[in-house]
Length: 206
Image 1 (cartoon, one colour):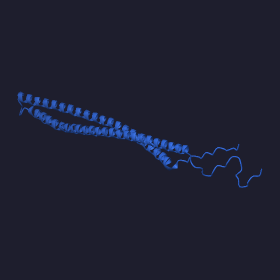
Image 2: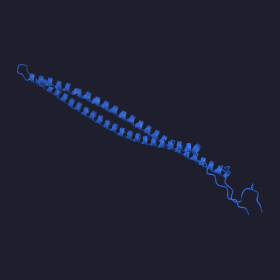
Image 3: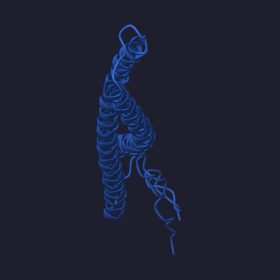
Image 4: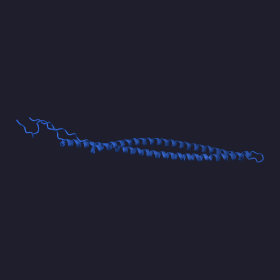
């Protein structure tokens, strides 16, 4: 039987160069894009969580820095009180030196002091010595309080530095998630590779 030369040959047909996308392929691409944007949303949520954590840590660090400055101020005040008390001691010691000089002058036979006057001067010297010891004690207490406040300030500084380092790490995590979300969003919007067309099934003549 003769065949027409214009008829296509029997057997499997060649796939067209740009076949139409089937509904299943469209659904697959939409599902891939939807999944991509879902992942972007999740990454941005994680970035926001890390940003909130970094903000909380920064706030804690600021609170401890305020406590540190308050402790340093207290230490400065105590140190100032200590220095003020220490300045009183030379004045009191000078008063004792004057009274002792008066006692030595009263021992001179030419102008002796009465026993009552000598006892009064000695009592006054003893009271001034007691006062000096009290000033020494209060100055020592002020110095100890200043040292304690400086130790508290150092402790708060260490805690603030720790929170600041944790905040830096949290900010780095937030930036990392944001960068990943940006890259994935670009890929989901326009850089996704198109679905590869499936060749049509081979047709056979009966």
